[in-house]
Length: 122
Image (cartoon, rainbow, N blue to C red; front, side, top):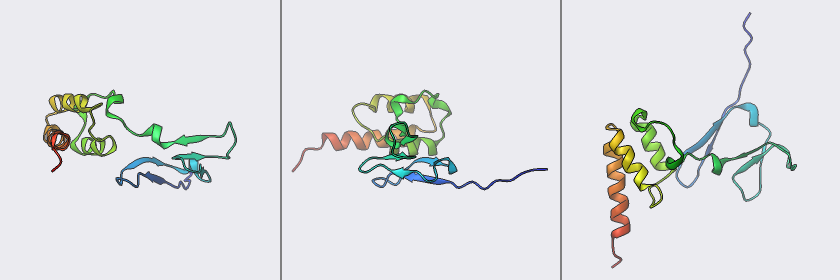
């Protein structure tokens, strides 16, 4: 006989860009947000379970997956999660070389980023 259980799911959304940082199931139900931090805490105690969402954000420089296997949607999400900067532009350019499907969106983003940092104010 199969036993079914209910599970609640919720997403943590970065309100500055609308990206889903993480999706959780019922394991974190009842946790509370720590004041002025992006951290969920089970009890407030020193040894309490904590979910620090900023440390869980996907970062292109920490991605160890083969870029050639990422689909365009994953690449677009990565660009939103970890937008182009001087720290990660080389990694994104490597991604564009390794992933022909992503080349267009990455090249467009790199071009926009470079235009933005080289424009001189009026």
